Image 1: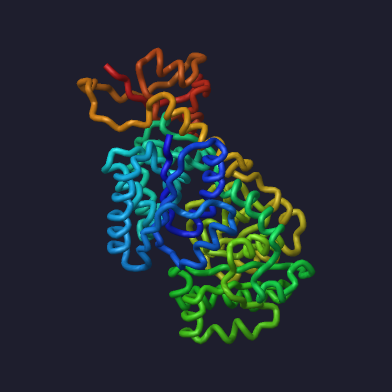
Image 2 (image 1 turned 180 degrees about the vertical axis):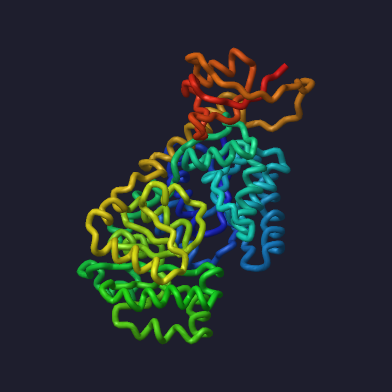
Length: 440
């Protein structure tokens, strides 16, 4: 078997590193393709070395550009590689332009697509990431979803539960794997090393880069107003160049930089940032991935957004959406700092993304599909059978698997007292309402 992986950004590399590891352990042929969406030769090459994974076999070097131009160049380069390599499956991760390009190209070439971290939905169609992840899911054959909630999103979009694999999120595998590498290496960025964070109390790590925050003066003032009053915390802010520029344009950078308890430093490499996160009392962020990393590392998170495609972190109790409202940010930050029971509840929130074996579960599912001959996309040879869509209340002891066999059917939705559940094969349906397709 040959597996191709398409990567475009550092978060993808980070989250796919455990899967790349597992592929190597199983002796499976791997084709690693880097689109160069966020590419700097020296930094990118070093990044693969830092994470102790092999360098890419191919790099397309698309660089930055408009969404259309960037995606088009990626598709052209990916297509050439896939035609030459003929992998059995192409894996894409997340919601970047590289994911969109890889999924579209592979599906058009009749190569199965496996979407790692499938099913996430913010339900905000102004986000380009939402378009990318939805389009990739339309193209996929196998869906490696982090949680049951993500799986239910896909069921609601009429995707068969037989193609859904609840694996947890590889971010957990990655955090555990990479934190060990980071501890072994130590802090390399001088601006962070000089802060002596090992002996610092009440660290609040801040990240802020989303346009809806940094391009909005009113929102920025609310956030900075809260930071100004959190003087009992050591606020460490690895600042993105674009964020710094907009703060300067609004006349807010000097105000923030002059606060004694605020430490503005250079953007950090991933391993340095992971160490900082692990030592933090609180995370304040508008990042999606950091919401996952925080709950994995048992660090309370306050998210500077009004919606999230990681709602499981909120439901679990490890993350609170605070938007840009100064008073809401202050209220929750102070509760974490002053109310030990509240803080411990957030730290001890059950991780919805699993216990760190996502890469194993993902490769188990792929190998099972391959061995059963299911990694093939071919024109049908049988005349399509008709089916009826039905709803029923089940009053007998019967599992999903047995119901489908006995009734020549495919279950879509399962409701237990009005609550939607994932139709796992072993789920007993007694007393539940179901919708299903019954084949003639």
